[in-house]
Amino acid sequence: MAKFKKKNKTEENIPTSALPDIIFMLLFFFMVTTVLREQELLVEQKLPQATQLQKLEKKSLISYLFLGKPKNTSVYGTEPRIQANDALITTSDIIQWVNQEKDKLSEAERDQIYISLKADRDVKMGPVADIQLELRDADARKILYASVGKVNQED
Amino acid sequence: MSQEVNAGSMADIAFLLLIFFLVTTTIASDKGITNVLPPKIDPNNPPPEIDKNERNIFKILINSNDQLLVEDDFRDNTDGLDKEIKEFVMNFGDPDQENMDLYNSLPPVLKAQANRDPESSDHPNEAVVSIKTNRGTSYDLYLEVLDKVKKAYYEIYAERVGLTADEYRALSSRTAAEKELMDRGKENIPMAISIAEPDKGGE
Image (cartoon, rainbow over all chains, first blue to last red; front, side, top):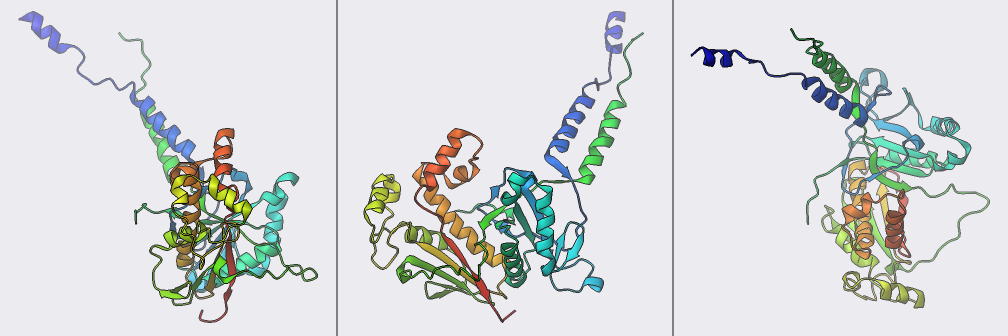
């Protein structure tokens, strides 16, 4: 009988030494797949859906323009506004902004600049067309209409 | 007596870090539909007027009420638009010698899609899909239409190299083999999407 008792007494708690490893793996996954949010959004952003999405290969070439209804409507009104970096800008500021963004790139990459237009799905084509016209003038002609994936339905 | 270092709190520290990253980060979503805008208009050097046959242009008009006029037919949704564009591009109504060679080089799947309708496009190099919107058109619908046009072209490219459209789009130009496939898919079939400046009014 004494023999059995001794056996029951041995190590009853679960070994948790592997737990930190598991958590670290999760941690690394999130560290690798995510980027730190660089700026605070001042406009609403509900990206439209599309199916034919493409991923750009060089992230350093992308500059972001946000377009949407301002979040703070009492200050900025309800008309769609453009946000570049941290501030709301007007259409006429776009050329200057593009040139600033181009200056950040090396000389060889300057004409490869991609503008990612993150426009809210409720925007009308008017402001979008205005932006495109300015981008043409600023000679930043590659544009990416940022959108999120849609569940692919067969038709 | 165990000599081990107590590692139980390690999980808590890792958890803290994990939660910090979860809260402060967003998953990168640099995905979207690419488009290249036309070059700036030089007032001294206006672009030449190009006379294109009506049959070589696939016209899509969208008004401020988000109604569509596709090839002069009214409709209120974009269903089946991708198929029509595909048929239009691959029509081969009146190909010249060069495009006859292109036709002969296509896999049978695509050859079967050539309707050879004299009322539709002459050959893929001549075919243009034109999208014209109004300033009051919703951006969402514009992107939906552009998405359909892109889909039509990607399906053509993909079928040409024997892939599905999703596989074709996932190809990257970083590896030589994938780049070769990519180039072979789009060779001599330019993605000619013309986006006209929107009409004023109705905003």
